[in-house]
Image (cartoon, rainbow, N blue to C red):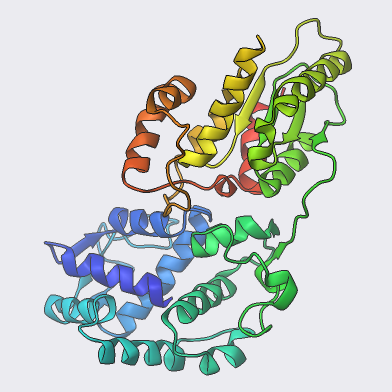
Length: 374
């Protein structure tokens, strides 16, 4: 709970009032853990608050305190801090070490005092004093400590994004494991998704609906699995990143898929092509570049998969991994995504931020597709 506790201390230290409402604390937990449901977040928050109360940094209202508890809620309506000066001093020490010596001392404290659990009980105390290694270890330990009794297995890139904020952190874990081989894919309830040889997946039930093109293999897999259970698209197509910008793939190949989709559902009109990829400059430039090719050949354009992009914007932003492509023009992005999505996206790009498509995990696809099934 170390990272959560640090963030709670910072919030408490910055509060102008001694009484901090649970609405604010729940907002913080939602920002830190967007990938889990409210019940699990409340469990994490309760654990952290009880830990702070045991250290006498905060007071949790007694069960019979008037208006302090709502029937059926495990959390109180507010907490009080005991000594703001002490909290502020502790928050500053943990969040902003003044020099390298104090920073290393803090790392030593994490390594030696963190309440390791599961396999991390053996691995944690011997981890090297590296800020990045310990950061990952604490996140893994926190996941293992708070994992549900029946966790939903996810593709490794989706779990990586949820744990570390970057979809490729666990890229080679299937080969060597984490922390010298001590933590495996199974320990993190995830599995590797290989790149498909055939890039089109049809649902068992043929439907007259748009075709979804997905940029990356992990998201292609998750979309395909859920679309087969709750068909929303007539086909899921693996875009293979930039490869689909090739003339033959962007024209003849996509038109063949459209025709086959129409034949399967006995439709007269060819279905629309919807595209979903990373919300970063390079990820948006791909469908815009494809549309330039299709326009030259007199073909209908690719449309943005708005129900997916709109949901993607609700997840945390990330640092960029690509520069702005030379071929991407801001007005083209606005025309393709439309308002108000384009404004939000350009604002993030200007701040050097992005959204990885893997935020739309197999769990989120299930939620979206179930609500929009044809």
